[in-house]
Amino acid sequence: MRPSPRALLCARAAWRECFPLRGRDVARWFPGHMAKGLKKMQSSLKVVDCVIEVHDARIPLSGRNPLFQETLGLKPHLLVLNKMDLADLTEQHKILQHLEGTGLKNVIFTNCVKDENVKQIIPKVTELIGSSYRYHRAENLEYCIMVVGVPNVGKSSLINSLRRQHLRIGRAARVGGEPGITRAVTSRIQVCERPLMFLLDTPGVLNPQIESVEAGLKLALCGTVLDHLVGEETMADYLLYTLNQHGVLRYVQHYSLGSACDDIERVLKSVAVRLGKTRKVKVLTGTGDVNVVQPNYSAAARDFLRAFRSGLLGTVMLDRDILQDHPQPTRHPEPTGQGAASRAS
Image (cartoon, rainbow, N blue to C red; front, side):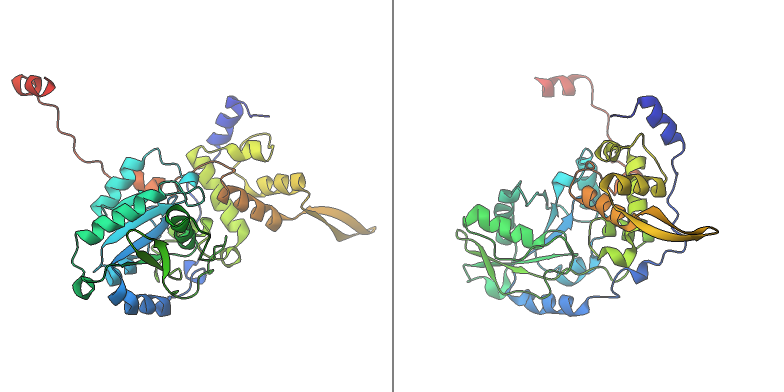
């Protein structure tokens, strides 16, 4: 049953204007650094012609590791924003403008599960290598590409997708729905015959200094760290806050709730009851022990997060706040008179 517009309007009036971030220590959620993996990447650069950085399209502006650009920036750089099917890309032009302002002009949005836009990558990489100086690799006819990114953004999925597209063979890199599947720089994996191209898969490397607690929460929602390090209920609360702020209310229908709600305890209680995620707890009273049915909030929070990550709750742009703060380029008025008329003709 769909909630009425009046019910949604009343609920929206009571929504939080900001998410409480005090007392949340982002340093506890993320490893201090992943220097070993980054050093291994640097040592492999001498055999690399181009770097493909993979990131989550739901957070195209936040959470990217600046160390990639600083330490691997001598090579041509392509940014692949993966999981585009889960992202709200109605303001894609703003994303590209913002990235171009940081010096990133080569950006491709992909969905590696359905191989969407993946065919654009090999031609683009070939173009980038062809227009750059290859140093001591100039006489080498084969290309070697390094794939980098923060954990769980789809680096291995991209490699497997490229192999399906260009070699028509199965997967060569392990994939998974949680961070840390790839733990070392792998040996070369062929992804294309013409041109002859090999890729190096690498472990996910996070920024040693996450810029803010909210940026950390965005990364956590996208599964870049193990959920229990942040806390499933904390993440579910931030997700509920975000969905309500963005007007993405599909969770109401998905869980058959009466209306939109901004109280995570009420939402998780309803989810737990609907999914049968409850447990009996003995409570001591004045007349003896009484069995009370208690919702399993942690299990409900895990299902809430799983539904979001699967796209069942709708698409979302977690960096919408950054896009809103990004100034648009000045538009010059169209000229009038004879010049305009001659162009029109």
